Length: 495
Ligand SMILES: [Zn+2]
Image 1 (cartoon, rainbow, N blue to C red):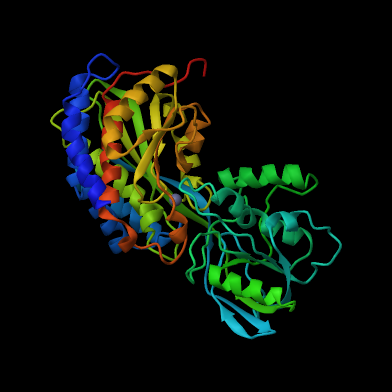
Image 2: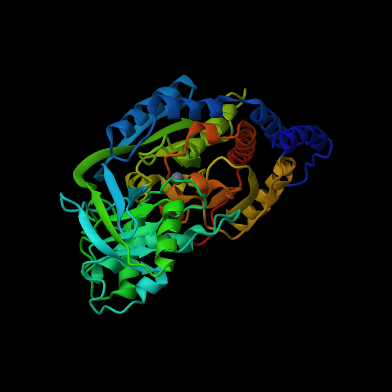
């Protein structure tokens, strides 16, 4: 990446020679965007923000004491960087934690396996479970299996693999087993469920992640609860959905351990495993969203909202998920805040709490700021690691689309193409806002390697490439500046 970023910096200078002033972007605003890009490629402030968060706070499980420390850290960080209107908006949430886990093969070839509990998993009985494995090649095989009592007293194992692609499109299909295997196993009387990790690495790190369990619908209707309710309505219409939680343990094994199970199964052997886990729900705790602003100079009530999530899974320091996003949006906004002249509109940075456990911070934000959602003229989140941005996608009015076409021509020297113009994806925590008609854009990152690290103990600061990171900051600074310094109507009419 070093070579490409260096050549991008040279291109920025030559691009100035071809600046046009007959479009929706003024020459002055475009010149500032180019200056921000150059500064972004040189600045290490965002990168240092990630270093500080991952070092001085560390893991940040939603609802934990560590996540509360992250909020204090964020308030201090924003204040020191000169942001205004820094505040925390707390909300209550159901708290789940992991605890210790042990998984071993008892028969036919005794040995230990590397496993972790999935978010929402129940504990095993105190002395653990020893059961035969019922092996399924895919989630669909389990979903379509007859309920004939054959899974009673077994531990279900689901093997399907995730495919690695730039867009991360392999995640959705592979993630079905993480979301719903517990439900299909439990409905057939199984005692537990084990899945091959949803990931693309071949290291001995299991990948955690939330099962789709509506943890407490009265507290917060997050996306996971809606996903499971939709799934139940289509697959199990007579299921009681008032408060669905897993009553069985659900764990993921690392890819090499999954390969081991697969090889033993292929020998025609019946596996027996022993599983012991203490995971479970532990009452209601507090989380919160941390907010900071750069007030607009002409249209302060109009808001360009950029976000990332502050929580992480507990097993690593959450560097690529989503410390990187925190550093990218903060670093970009900080560069804009350093300019001699503020943009016309306000830039609001939101660091969402409790994303991993069901977008609880995102839904809390939309609920607590319901009267203000109409003032958000454009929104996006950085939550796909620290790989280089390669595409600008958007879902806005026709005028907004033309404007973002011009924006892309300005950021093209960073190696960014114009992607889908009818895409309502702004990032996971933007979903509740997009559902209410808030226009979105996304700076799509190369996610080829993202799911090697995602939700594993290996998601640590050393994995972030400083040059790729700087390219992100440069792109975000330019796009956010241009949108905030415009008076373009991004919102679609008749909404
Ligand atoms: Zn994330």
